[in-house]
Length: 224
Image (cartoon, rainbow, N blue to C red):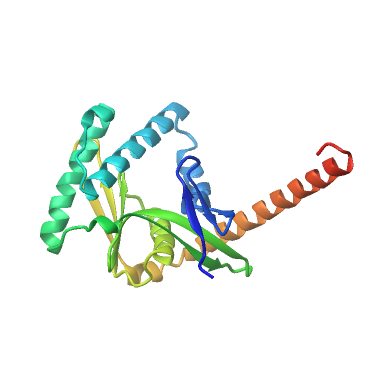
């Protein structure tokens, strides 16, 4: 029987056979919290809004649509210009155009952790080609992006020879960081990802058990 995989656009959640499954971002959220914990909440929210808008503009462009700049905040324009410059560079160097079907790919994978927990993880990659994966950031690439690429490799293309993080900047420039798959496969800190997945499974198992206990007690007391 074919698995039913659904992405809920409204809640930005992934579902597999009727069960909600975690995203790559959720699995790696402890790292994000450590990196951004001292940054003002309003600054983070504005950066997240800008990132969503730029990614939408990129998605529409790769799918062949025209961009109406009146639909977006002005602070997104330098990042979008950086993307256009990168796209011209990538296509001239690689000798190929990114296909419409390669953009904004969603998928899932099964992962067995060190504690023998089986978990299903989902994610959305900006571009998945025959032998490469590309993810755009509205910031500079950073070393921790490796962990995201590791999980994307598991989800989308274990045979991808190269993965790229393209950092789009507010001055209209970009910085591309390229990782060979052999390097990603040899990353010693892959154990960190496994630990995060185990922690995620344990926490959510305890939450689920607690909710079941509350529901049972409520039912026994006639609340439900």
